[in-house]
Length: 218
Image (tube, rainbow, N blue to C red; front, side):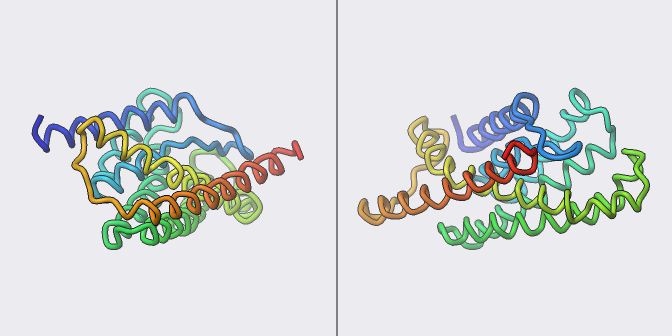
């Protein structure tokens, strides 16, 4: 299998996984806003193949979602594409420039900020059109609902990406689907892995706790 075929196979597989995340793992958070981990898959694709791959995957998954799962038509497609691209493409672009753990963390945090800012703006502009809410009502929800939801979504995406990216890469290398890469010294790699896992788990637990608070369970 040549490198181009491997890449296309990987992208197709990641698109399928992202779609499955939308179809099977939607979690209601607040109002009509739901979290699904598809952006984690799209970001991993971007980390592996660059920001353009994240964009193409986001567009394809959003299109299939519009045709099969969504009832919001082109507006829903545009909102899904904007949300996914603002997070995944931003993170992948920065990681491509700084191909280190620090670059990955910086990219994911930047993606969270970009997605949050963009979605607050576009929810203010678009939500009154396709949800039928008065614009004043949507404006009143921006800070208490849309802001914490998008920060929560970005936090979950960041934690999950940091937790599973390396195991996914190792599995793909063992399957000979991506090229091997020189590893850091074992002791340094182990130390980084432990620290990264602890930070990611703490962030993930914080986000889960926040969801439970938003839903009134705690």
